[in-house]
Amino acid sequence: MRIVLVGPPGAGKGTQAAYLAKNLGIPHISTGDLFRANISQGTPLGVEAQSYMKAGQLVPDSVTIGMAEDRMRQADAEGGFLLDGFPRNVAQAEALDAFLKADGIELDAVLDLEVPEDEVVKRIAGRRICRNDSAHVFHVTYNAPKTEGVCDACGGELYQRDDDTEETVRKRLAVYHTETEPIIDYYRAQNLVATISALGKVDEVTTKAMDALK
Ligand code: ADP
Ligand code: ADP
Ligand code: ADP
Image (cartoon, rainbow, N blue to C red; front, top):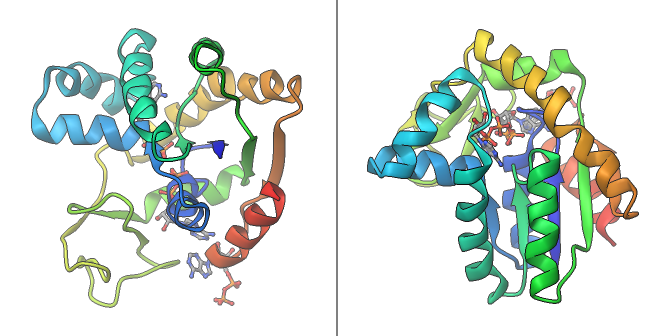
């Protein structure tokens, strides 16, 4: 199965992707996580991406598309992928189509997570992520770890992303509306879009998502 997850920053894409990828038995590919791993390892790609991410802007397509394609090639050998955070503009969606076409494969669905803006701002403000594993995502009130600052799953240190500030969140939301939302219409034209509300508890959203993918 090949699925694209879309939704504003803080919608719960990473949280849902971890469960969906497990349920569906396909790898979860997050371009944001790939960039953050490159930043923490100090690679040239990380150095290039960092200033854009900190400013809440998209990393240029020239860097992003090649990185995503490398990871998709690996994943497809494992039965497909769940894309989280890619594509994020129409040029990336077109590049993804060309990539799929060259391999004679297709997307199965685009899952669109809808959340009101005041809720995503609250979700992002309280987000904490494990240093050991970016799939371990917490929230200081909605999904609090048993011990403050410590990951329940692995004991790793929880941290706040340096782009999760109010100012950068507003910029990321603006970028989402102008650059990312148009891909929803792009995929509607291909009849691939399933829209669900991402309000409610994490497991309720997972159930709705699994139903939408049937
Ligand atoms: P969120 O889950 O909060 O939306 P991500 O982890 O997906 O955040 O992305 C964080 C940042 O990484 C983005 O603001 C952007 O700078 C960069 N980024 C991630 N994916 C892409 C992409 N496909 N194209 C360009 N930039 C990206
Ligand atoms: P995204 O990848 O779309 O940016 P995340 O999965 O990182 O979003 O979630 C953003 C924050 O919201 C995290 O702190 C996460 O724990 C929290 N969160 C995720 N799903 C829900 C939910 N259904 N209700 C409340 N908070 C949630
Ligand atoms: P409860 O009644 O169990 O406190 P609600 O269903 O009233 O929870 O949820 C209030 C909000 O808190 C929800 O909209 C959801 O965003 C968030 N929330 C509740 N439980 C969780 C959870 N386990 N993980 C993340 N967010 C949650």
